[in-house]
Amino acid sequence: MKNIFVINGGHPFGHSGGKFNETLFKKTISYFESLEGFTIEATQVGDVYDLKEEVKKFKKADVVVYHTPVWWFQIPFGFKKYIDEVFTQGHENGIYKNDGRSSKNPAINYGTGGLMHGKKYILTTSWNAPKTAFTLENEFFDQKSVDEGALFGFHKMNAFTGMKLLATHHFHDMEKNADVPKELKEYDVFLCNVTKQLNQ
Image (tube, rainbow, N blue to C red; front, side, top):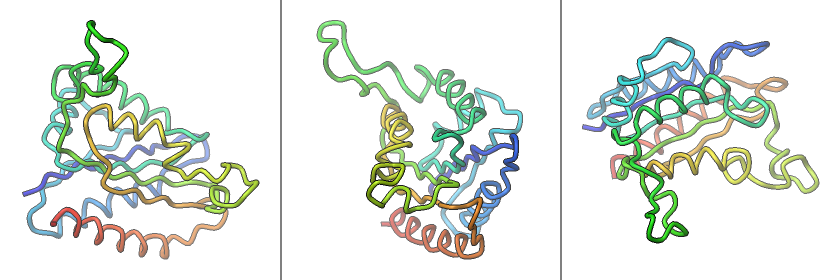
């Protein structure tokens, strides 16, 4: 039995209603619920949540699935608040013990004090930026991928806790040229591939 914890980091703000990430969130939950051998827990960061209960969800999870839009090249402020509050609550309580260094040699081993070793995470992001903004020469992101560039810190945050990346899936051009049925069909393929990895 594998425990899946699904988090929707999107929430309504300004012109963003958060509908696409809510769709992904619900789709992920229903997908894993349809399979044998998985238990599901879930959180929408726009809802009221209890910090101790959220820490328990991370501690119980074998796989954490993060869904988030990207606002101004970062995760939404409500999602950042959630991470700050929940991970701080998890200090010496299942998420991380310390930064990994010792007073005897403080120059080494930074980032090795996580308590979530053996757990994995999946990240999906949705962007207004087209995919070509990341891949073409002289375009905005200097040919750095989402994972190497804008979301590099997010991946390091998870590594700090001890978690390892299982897979990422990024949705591009979702404001001006979204083909939602096509994107959801490709996400189905992604989920199938992830499931194969989990069952290996």
